[in-house]
Length: 458
Image (tube, rainbow, N blue to C red):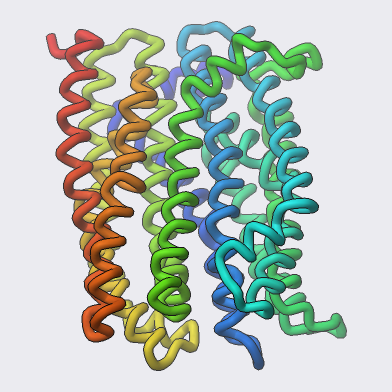
């Protein structure tokens, strides 16, 4: 059985292998978005204070993204390093990469625990002067941080399962956690089954319990099924060289995800200067958009280990096929998402009980920002390709371009127009298609450089 699993990574056609690994990863990543969107759906329909609660979750959202970014980025680094080591038949190094990743997950949890206790309140208050919204946002974020060990450890074990080709196992673990969250949300938020109604606190408890269930399931799979990776106590001892190699690969992924946090936090401040409804509309749109972005990230996460494994084998033609099919699949996901969002903009606004100005802003965001998906798929695929080929800096450049450099200047310009003329509020959303288009041009140029640098053009 061991050789059969290794042969799948070695000999299955790249296009077919990307699909077989990518589909479970896509499902897994999409289910990560469930945690935020499900909480939002339930709290927005509370009998009182639903829109304020939705705004509170929007303010907590950037830091939640940062939490996930650090966990997933560490997992991505371990994923690629482990997959490459397995491709080279170096099981000792693969085991060390896995053990050090588990150690890093513990360090991440301790840091989040400290922040939850000491920093959550100040963070939320930096974005709003509304006392009620700030209190709900602080309660939600503090619980998510204090009990974040499920998220931290699952992020690592999920990627270790994927690195050896067991992506279906990581998907099952993710499904169990997501279903747990969905079941517990109404029970805790509304006070079903004789429990007291906890509101946003209930949403937070449902989230962390779901994450803990995912972690427990992934750990069992790793110990029982992930036999390609050796589990030894001595591998948990931190190795500076291994940690350096993990973050050489994973840091661009962390920065890429963390920049989403920076972007949403900055846009909360910019849009908050226009109106609170603008912040609510954008925050809700972004959580829906996450389903598609995370689906593309799932394919990107399939591109990385498959390409890295091929890199370890030294198979240039296989790497070419990974690049080609990776782009085809990722772009197809985003274009399909564009069509779906354009069609479902109004029905989604009804699901979340939106009305008036908030509903209008939300619908315009759905219809305008989604145009950026045409080029977002290209950029996301390139990020995975660059990381797998050792182009961490190139991947980082793409992240910074699409989430900072070409976002904030245009957002500030268009926000000024929207503030001076309320009829032009929709123009703020044009920022995103512009940023993705310019970044796609830069990504193509960077790819040509790294491809020739690695001497794969022959």
